[in-house]
Image 1: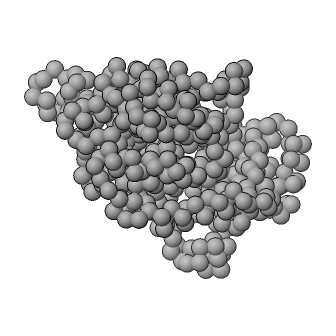
Image 2: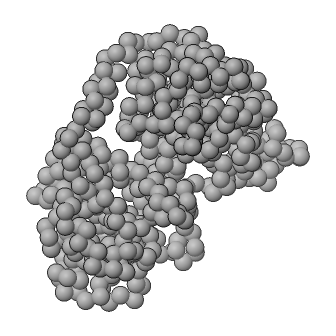
Image 3: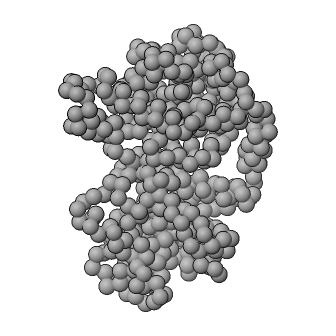
Length: 479
């Protein structure tokens, strides 16, 4: 078991770090299974606002989970189950359920041992079912967060229980602009706090704007009681897929195996070189393609966040790289377009337009304006989920002459409900059952020969993942 914790601040990239560690182990012939722990009391990520927690990652088995599991799948080329995202909501719900069913035989139910035991049971169950060599457990948030304390205690107990456990702590080494010098004090305090709750990290990964120098590495090692060779540099990079290569240069994979007393099962260099050539190709691309993403989940106070659409970004990146071009993503707020249609001119130098998924009325007409612009100006367009549904609305209004056509999600009284609730969803909505009740997960799709979809996929039967309550109204398809 490898536990990855974070310190100083959130958003350091524990998901990318965990994925990169998993990649190193895969290159050396080991099977890995990643788990993400989130301290929030939501049962899953399905009802969380995108601007608060980032996008929802949809698993093949119908889970709505943390976006980090998307990184796991992209890096490791595996399907991750919904059960691999553990939340406080799930743990406490199960503990209370067990108590109500009398499974604790009258004991006083407490954080220790009952909650920690449930956490450990979940982790071990995933390990048993996956039959993996390494279980990578990323604990979200930072050391010191109230909601994470019980998970870190469970991680401590795993080693006490006699399991083979390694602790990796990802922390931050800032370079304040007014100083121009990397400061290790935040890392020192973060490790100190981790040790106070019973965990001595085996490896420290230092995230910093620049590569860690020997002076700071030695300082971190002394104050953290970790050998200098086990202080790993994690500098800012332009392409996240370069991180496994940076870790490999520092022999991180070998150092992990050394801690467990293991040796590589296969020579890593064949797979590593394929990965290296891919990253080198990405970094050398010159020709650009400009893709506009017309969405609404950007703003968080005075800041603009892109995590709401991270999978869309990565899909555009992968598609562009495959076609030997460098993607330049242009962000367009549909709410602004709705208020100021004159701003549509921003789309005139765009090579393609993507309207991603979303919920609710805000910014809808702005998205429809962008879709109309793409159709009239013959700009390549891709509508995803709600974005595709709105493309149907736009076409119905402006080409088919169905005045005031709409989705019943936006206008329940529309005279032309070209997008409507799935039949099985009506009862659920009436009963206010929103959590994990959409059409979710992987489904088989049959493509019609002669269509653009069939041309792109090259086959009749495909599998894609879904997350929606509404569909194109079958009554209007023939019209």
